[in-house]
Length: 233
Image 1 (cartoon, rainbow, N blue to C red):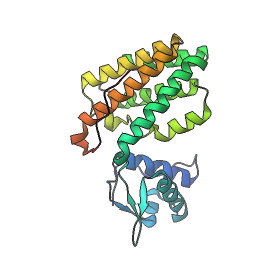
Image 2 (tube, one colour):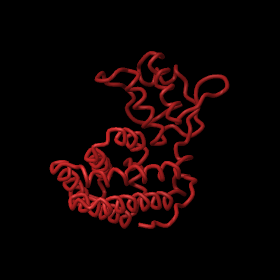
Image 3 (tube, rainbow, N blue to C red):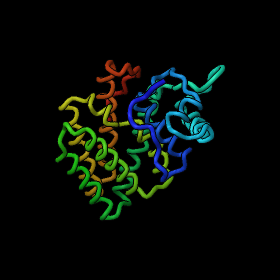
């Protein structure tokens, strides 16, 4: 069992929380492969912590559906992409709703934040996938914040880290990247204009396009998922 990157933990969070965060991201980024077995002892040694927080992290990951128990020792990594189609439809509904509510409820400062992030995405170097991933994350979360719907924010956050990591953004073509940035600008403009219908429609179209782009890159990632219906927005 091996995984790249730094695996020593910081002390700002509990060891259990840090182990959970690190393992979750590693699974999502395919540092651990589907079907790979992980053990408390092995991960504890990798992270430099005791087995108890690793056991707690494994339990949380199991609740997330990212690992499952196996016969005998350890746990087995589950491929989160197995549910990709369902997750994208759920995400489209939730974030479309968030965009609608942001247009209706967002404060002037919150809306300006959304607009500024769309502009920052436009200005970013297309080759700088780390910055692009960060700006994409901040843009979508700024919209959910502006929705003033705490339960919706929690639900969106649960799915956010399954998308648009630097690794995944590298899969997209230059044309796909430009279209995604244009989508951000359209969404931001609709929210700024307090046009709730357009904000929701633009967000839904953006996410359907993102899913189609992911499927276009699927052969390189061995993703198996159904193609969504054509956008009706």
